[in-house]
Length: 236
Length: 236
Image (cartoon, rainbow over all chains, first blue to last red; front, top):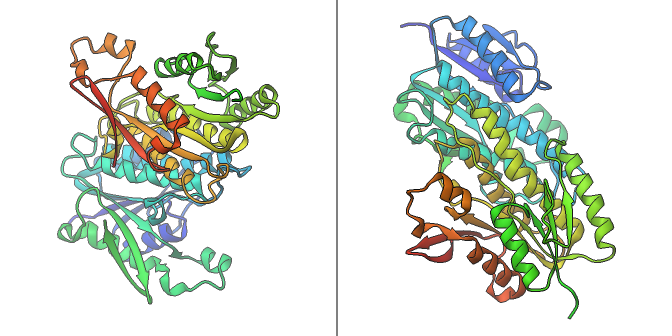
């Protein structure tokens, strides 16, 4: 069996580095996109988030093309993102909306563009939405708008003539709360029995990628629901 | 009865200038935001779309504050926007996605921020989404994402503690195709019996603004459906 390849966008984040480690343990070739290098990855593609959107894509595209040669990715996992709050009365409303757009939508669209160029036929792309953004999010308007845009991108990419390779599929994961060190630090008194472990997600993505019959339908928004420390995904 | 005031964001566009004219005919005080002046408006607020997002809002906010004094708007109508296509394979995918974000989301969020500051208690804000964006839009991914974000903004603003004034309401109109001179020019052979006349929309908005009982529920996405030259709105 030939070497399998995955690209993790956000490979230094809590979820991204868990994915890098998981796929390395499965002996995959792993590329990581982030602002810094993940030493566990086979190849790092460094992105300067201060660069304009098109320049970020062009830089990554060129570096990935050189690294891959004639190979392509079996899967691209985009778990880049961030969080910031604010309603329409907040002083930071527009500033945070701008940041959320860049962190979630720029990365997701670049992942879509890279999928057009470097994903195999029949390959698998995953993006990261948010369960909260299935409804209005008055206390974090910019975050909700950006995640709603990612949900819509997922639907568009799953439609005919979206620009994804033939028979490629796309699914978004919609976390509620991830069990990350940062969330543990900032919410020390929270009930963590409803938080989704990162390892569960890495394993879930691995299953979807390697066993097409296990995948939710193309274009699904898969909410990650954890209750009493038991995690599952739920498609609307 | 005291003078009533409306602010039209995009007051020089086809739909915006129809709204300016309609409200002037009803003897309202009309402010227009656009890149140039609409001579029918009582007051023009000029926006430089090359300015950064926060600067656009700050400039408008300051000019509107001076113009209004202690008065506030009964309604704010945001009909700014634009259209550009492209799937994930398109050379212009990111460029057009960026443009769509700025034209639709920047304007809608600035309208939300101005509503926080200058809309009366119980006032009415309307935004402009797109019927097409209720589903995936593979041939115009950036447009769909931006309009999906506006739909989400509508839901957020209609929720508790969104930053809108007390008892204020927000509804988005979701056009299919508007009967504008530009659409007639570029689609000369199209069946215009399914296009929505601009006058219908101006009259509809006027009714919603002046007769609260006629409004669809707060946070509605009101698709504008025209068939056999008969127009109506449909809330999902």
